[in-house]
Length: 530
Image 1 (cartoon, rainbow, N blue to C red):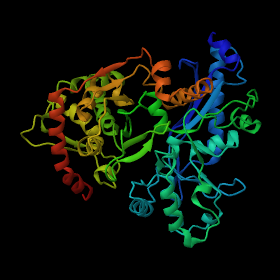
Image 2: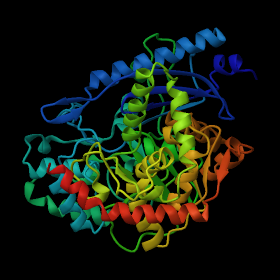
Image 3: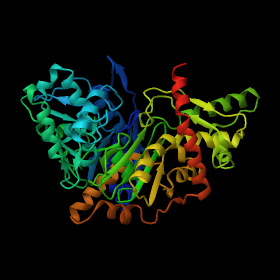
Image 4: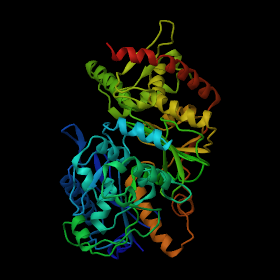
C-alpha cells in the first residue's frame, strides 16, 4: 500500500509531543517511516513566580500543530485525513495540573521547570526512603499542602500535561507508566504506584481532613501497548479544527518525553541506555535490579513498558559551547572572513579530536544555571587553566565537550562505579552528536561504554510516540508481543547506525579531567560570590 492510500484509508499512526519550546506531530507507516510532520513554536511564561503555559496555549498550540501536519499531508499526498490506526500524545514530564470535580483547573499549570518544592521533596525523600525530585508531581502536591493552599481541599484529579491532553481527547483519566513514574514512585513488581508509599503519604496528610485519598486523584497507570481509550467527538474537535477527523480512533497510553526518547533510540531493553545532549543533558540506563540505596543525583523512573530506569538529569550541556562558537564567529566576521555557522561547529568539533585525552589540564564549568547534581543552586560559566597547562585550540574545544558531559558523568559514576550497573550500549541523540564521531567518541570515554548514534536519531520524541501508537496496534493482533521485540524486529532491524567503543586512553584521560574538575568545584563556588 502506498503512503497516499495508507493515509486516506486511516491506517497511518500519529504521535504528537509537547516539548518545552515546540509542539511537534509526526505521522508514520507500520515500519516507522515518517510520512508527514507539523509543528508549533511556543514558550513558557513566568507569571507570579511560576513557570507556566496556559490551557489556551495548550489547546491552540495543539490545533495549530495538527493543522500544520494536515498542510504537509495535503502538499505531499493531496488527500484528507479522517482517521488513524492508532495515535498517542506525549509531553515534558512531571509538573502539576490539578482539577476539581467539574474539570476546572484549580491553579495555573506548574511545569517541571519550577524549583519551588525543595521542602516537600526533601521530606518525601526521607519519608519514602526513595529519591523524590523537586519537579515530580507529588512534590508539587505536597508543597501546596505544606503551604496551606486553599485549592488542595477541592482536588479531584491531578495529572501531567500529556495526561491532560489524553483526557481531553478520550475522557479517560489514565497515563502511561513511564510518565506516571515521574508523578509518583512505581512498584516494578505490580506496574502500579507503590502502595506502601501511597499509604505513607495518606498518613502524612491525614490531619488535613481532605475528602480524598491520594490514589483517588492520580491517573490510572497503563503499560505501553494498552488500549487507553478512543477519540471522542469532542476530542476530535479539540484536535482538528478542520472537522475532517472522525471519532473512534484508538489512543495508546500518554507518555513522557523520557519514555518517547527511550523508544526513539531503541533503548528500552535491560542494560541499554540513552543520552540526550542539547541545552540540557540526561542519561537513562535500564536497570537489572533496584539500587542498594537512595541517591539524590539519580532519579528512578520506568520505560514505557514498566522496566526500572536510573536517570541522571543535568541542567547544563551545550550552552557554553554555543557561546564560545559565537565568539569565534564574531572574530571571523571581524577579520572579514565570515564562515557558515554549521561549518564552524564542524571544524571546531573535529579539532577537539586532536586534543590531549585529559584536555591538556584545561578545565571549564558550563554552568549557565544551577547544577543540582554537583550541588549548585546557581551557576557562572568559567574557564580555568594554569600557566603550565597545554593551551591549544584542540585542547580548548575538547575541554568544552568534556565539560558538557562532566556533571552527567559525576552522576552516572554513582551507578556504574558505586552500584556496579552494567550498560552494554548507550544510544546518543541531540545536538552534541551532530558532528560525526566527535561527541560520540568523547561520550564513550566519559561513560566507558559503547555509544551508538542511529540513522533515525534526529526524529526525536514525537516519532517515538508514533512508534508507541504502532506498537499498540500491533499488540491488538499479537497479545504476546513485547515492546523490545517490536522495536528490534519491526522498526530498527537493519538500522545499525554507527557504534563507537570507548578508547582506553580516552577513558583514562577523561577520568584525569574529572579528578581536576571535581577538585575545582570550590573555584566555581568562589566565582558565584564575586
